[in-house]
Length: 351
Image (tube, rainbow, N blue to C red; front, side, top):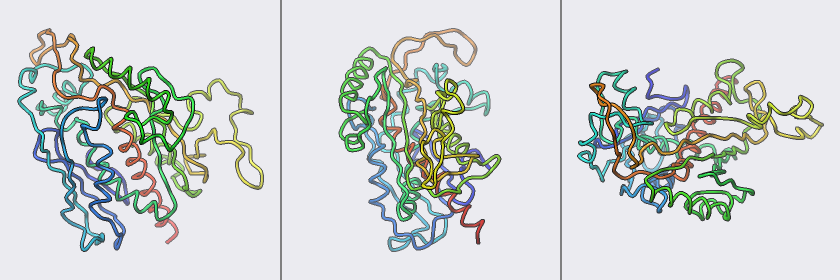
């Protein structure tokens, strides 16, 4: 399967570059007759789009969705669904000065090593702008999941060295960091703004909870539910780590502490994070990702150019000083794509 496609029975293929004409997605496997409106997809894209606050990039994109095929009179036809978002605020000339230099933390060097050619305009295909297409597809997946009582909620758990001490779902969309604790959110925002003024950036931890997943989803070997979630999250350019359930803290636990005891009513704890043997337990699936500091910073950095000459680079432009707030809807979308794919595979197993 090409590297721009994801899923087996609910498949998406994304296309487009940061400063090209458009980004978009083709979805195959949408349930025929599904009622889905452009407004529903737009609502999710609005959560991801740039220019939302002082802790996101000031790039101005309306991210207006256009459903081009596989959709008739507000319903999915079962044919491949194509959705496009036209890039409106392109400034490719902003990268002319550094087009021959490798930006630290970016995929400039590796893309050139792989393809022998690269689009230097805002990272091209490697740009986070590609994730808008994933969110569009995720909106469709989430609509199907919601009809089966499955919900997905992600939030910033830690950013710029500040950790949340409580989880209140009601405050996540009430602060620009999309943190689950308002007190922590205020300190995160203050630190991120200070770093942005200094020409630097911050990373963080995002937690995601998937509720309502029935027991039995996932495959026993290579396509475990947690393995596919890990692949989905690590396919995001800013993500450098994944853990599920107790995660890395399990190394300091005893087996008697880590095992989730059961009684006739179910599991008593959830250290497994909702997955045993790669198959869902019916409990909440809980995982966390490590989001790196934004690579594009205006502080001078050491690098080389395409000829191998050592030089200094300063990355100017419009960049998020912290990626956590805008990656939240992307994380939820990728989680939705994994769950819907496994739901369809489970249905096919019992046909």
